[in-house]
Length: 199
Image 1 (cartoon, rainbow, N blue to C red):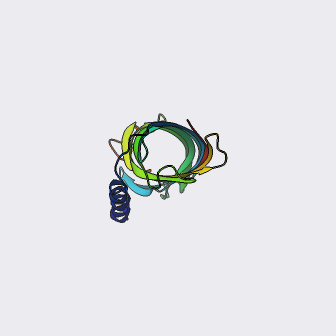
Image 2 (cartoon, rainbow, N blue to C red; image 1 turned 90 degrees about the vertical axis):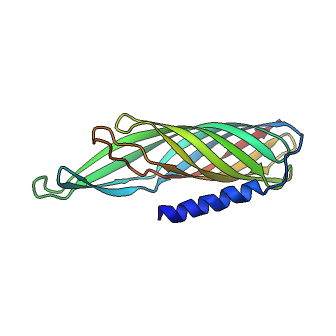
Image 3 (cartoon, one colour; image 1 turned 30 degrees about the vertical axis):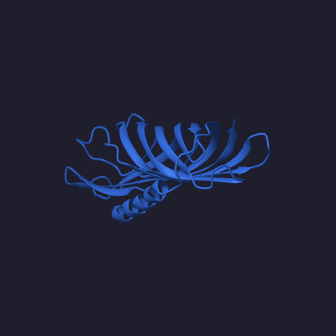
């Protein structure tokens, strides 16, 4: 499954790099959005001979970004936050199928290269690769992530205001604290809806 996702990611990045060449018209873009984040991971572990099943619910959060761009290419820095509830089940008669729940937060600081497919048009579509450092809550270790995003700014006025929609997929596998190096494939898929201001 992760191999299929990697192929999809490679296609998106390749499509981005064949976008038209960089032009010399600089600009500034500020984005703020709410986001809904699905956690793709759902795993089973064997800890000390006991099977532990872990899954995580989707969560709400927010996203802010600044992008400096030319006509066709932009460089974006962003920060986001989301909160999730996870649960683990120990299917053992010793523990009577005990189910333990808890929460964790993700705070990624990201850098992206956005390739603007249509230049400065009514619908400003962009896509490109993303790298990020994820600050996790105390039960998971901070970690590096990478992925891709696709989005669009939809003009709502001639003063630089636009509606923003975006979809981002990241490969993120933090170690679970206190487990001796067991990792969890969080792999978040984020849907973002908010506002953009261009100046």
